[in-house]
Image (cartoon, rainbow, N blue to C red; front, top):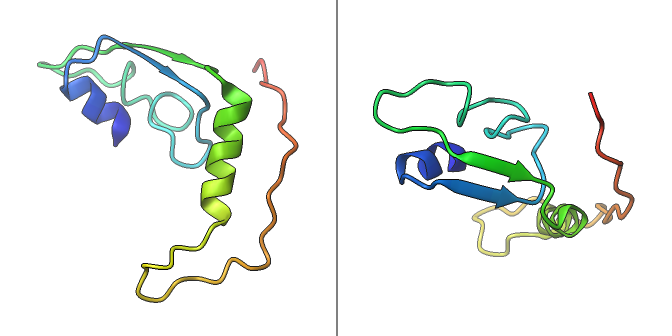
Length: 91
């Protein structure tokens, strides 16, 4: 969703920390930016890996915390923060 919104806003270049292997729209799962042609919105230059390790840890911390404002928050008490980060695969 973010990749498409950035494109529709006319953003020319994006730097981001890490791809998302489950939901990424900037090439990790879907190529919303460069692979899907659009008649009105040109693609933008996207560069991944900016502060990669920090970005991964921020997202991991976010996903292990509970949302106290949720109607029925899911218990995440048994989740632990993984601090090991795999190297970038060159595949």
